[in-house]
Image (cartoon, rainbow, N blue to C red):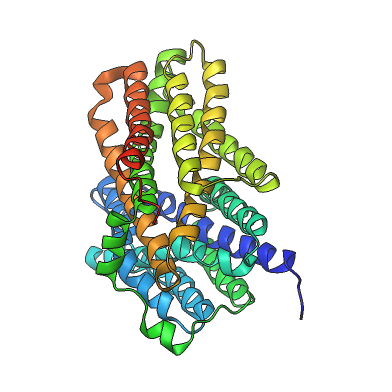
Length: 398
C-alpha cells in the first residue's frame, strides 16, 4: 500500500510518541510503585535505585547502535527493542515486592538498556523516511522533536493520573503496552536497508568516539549539547526554588515545569511548520545562546506569573535547539555510523543531564536567583566555546 510521504512520517510520529512516552513515564511509575509497596523497608531508596536502573544503561547505547547500523532491516531490530522494553518493564512491575530486589533491578536495567534505541536509535531513521530533500528532512526532524515534547509531557502526566485513579501497577503495564504498540507501528514504516558490504563496514564504537572528537562540527555540537543538557538537568530544582521564593510554596514548581513542557511543545510545532534553515552547527550555536538567554531571564522573574511566562519561553527556545542538533547528527554522520552517532550523542546528553541534576541539588545554596544564573552561564559558555573552536579550527568542516 502506498501511503505517500506524509503517511510514513505520521506513522513514525505515532511510533516515536508511543515508545518515548513509555520511556519518559517509566521512571515516574517505578518510583510511585515503590512508595506504594508495603513490603519494602525503604521505598524511596528503592524507587530511586530503580529509576537509576533505567537511566544508567544508556551508556551502552553506542554498542547497541552499531547493531542497528549493521541491521539489514532496522525496523525489526527497533521493534524487538521496544517489545523487550515493554516485557522487562512489565516484569519489574509485577515482581516488585514478590521477588528479590536484585531480580527486579535486573529487569529494570534490561528495560533501560533498550532506552537508547527508543530515543537516538529511532531518530536516526528520520532521514531515510523523509528522503533526500532538505526541507522535507528538516520538517521530519521537527516532528521528531514534537514527539519528544509530547512523550515528555504525556508520559509522566499519564502515569501520575492513572496511578491516582487506579494504581501504579496498571499505569506501568499500560506503558508496556504502549511500547508494544510502538513496535507494531514501527514495522509498518518504509524498509531502510543496508547492503552486505555496508553492513560489514559499519563503523566500530572506537572509531565513532574518535569521530566525535576529531570532526569539528560534530565535536562542537556534541559538547554544546552536553553543556546545555547539564544545565537543563537542574531545571526542576530551579523551578522549586523559584516557586518557593515567589509564592512561599514549593509545589508551584510542578506548574513551572509544566509550562516549560508546554513551551517546548509550542516551539516544536513552530519549527515543524517553519523548518530551520542554514548550517546545522551554526544554528546550534545560535540556539544554544538563545537557551542561555531565556534561562538567565528566569533568574530575574519578579513575580510568579512572569516566571510562568518565562518558563514557557525557555521551553520554546529549547525546541529549535534540539531540532538543530538532530539536523547536525543527520548531516554530518557518515552512513556507516549514523545510528551510532545519534545514539552516542543522545547517551552522553542523558549522562550530562543526570550530572547536572546532581550538581544543582548540591548547589541549592546559590538560591532561586543564583542557580538559574549559573545554569545560564554554563549554556552561554557552551555557545562561546563553539565560536572559539570554529575560529581556531578553520578546516573543521572537512
